[in-house]
Structure formats: C-alpha cells, structure tokens
Image (cartoon, rainbow, N blue to C red; front, side, top):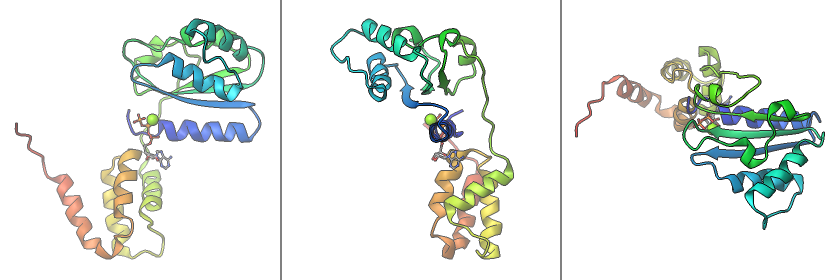
Length: 203
Ligand SMILES: Nc1ncnc2c1ncn2[C@@H]1O[C@H](COP(=O)(O)OP(=O)(O)OP(=O)(O)O)[C@@H](O)[C@H]1O
Ligand SMILES: [Mg+2]
C-alpha cells in the first residue's frame, strides 16, 4: 500500500544496522517505475568504491556480483520495486540470488503483494496500518499537540486522527496542516465535516 511507511521504516532500519556495526555498508536505492539498471548499478557501486562508468551493463553486473559476494557484510535496500513489466532483473544488475548472498543481504520494498510470488525472497513482512494509539502518537507529534494542550484541541485532534484510518501519509499531511492552528480549533470541525460529506464526481 502507498504511504504506509515502507521507505521511512527501511531507512530507519538501515541507519540502525549501520550504526550497530552489523553491516559494513548499507546502500539505499530507489527503483520505482521503469527500473534504470545503470542508475541502480551506479547507486550500489558508488558507496562500495567501484568505478566503472565506461563499461557495459553486463560487465558492471559481473563486477558488482563478485564485489557483493566477497564476504563483506553489505545491506542493499531496493525501495519501491514495482509489479510491472519489465520486472526488476537482479541478474542484470549484478545482485546475487539469496542462495549466494553470503554476508550480503537484500531488503526490497514494494506496494504489491503479487511481487512476493514473482521475486525469489527469503522472507516477507507485510506492513499494517497503525493502531489507533500509534496513530494518535504520530498525529500529536506532527500537529505539535502536547499534554498541556487544551481539552478541546485534544478531543478534536483525536477525532481527526481517527479519520486518518491509521495511514501514515494521511496522518503526516493532515496533522502537519493543523500545526500552529490550535487557536483556530473551531475551524477543525469544518475540516472534519468536509471529509464526512460524500463527494460527487461529475464529468
Ligand atoms: N513511523 C513513522 N513515524 C513518523 N512518520 C512516518 C512514519 N511512517 C511514515 N511516516 C510518514 O508518512 C509519510 C509516508 O511514509 P513513506 O514515504 O515511508 O511511505 P511509503 O510506504 O514508502 O509510500 P510509497 O509507497 O508511496 O513509497 C511520510 O511523510 C513519512 O514521513
Ligand atoms: Mg516509499
């Protein structure tokens, strides 16, 4: 699902694993729509100190493959892999299959459950929507609502937070738009009501 917090989570995980010394290199690259093999190869090669700009894609793939399987602890994060043709080709990039990874691990994020069947993954984790309490914690932080905020702000804030249905992108955008607006809390009702109105679509 879009906006559920995949990128935020993998970046945080990557940061923690690097800081804890579990990986010598944590490399992040965004894949998105049509995978750009050369760009992904460059994103991976750069932090590893490999320089091979002038070579062909297949030569780069070979070089990367041997670098990624030389026993060094490397975490590759491939963010936002799409379930559409052409599918991401690990071999063409030079990313070894998980049987040959040794100490190189690959973390892939995708919006699509179908990708689980198409890409040969060792483990899959599905991110869930936030619980009501976690939604409220995130909402308060983005809207700058604190314990000493007025009761009115807290009650209305909670109602609006609930309408975000646990989706981080909605919480981030809506709560941020209410930041600094606590003196206009009565206007928050207008926001709330406007969402509850059915929307008519006309061409
Ligand atoms: N745990 C979190 N704490 C605070 N903010 C978060 C959290 N998770 C997500 N967000 C915020 O929610 C928004 C959407 O998150 P993110 O971009 O990580 O989603 P995504 O699943 O990668 O979306 P997409 O599929 O569109 O790439 C961002 O503004 C991000 O800062
Ligand atoms: Mg993302």
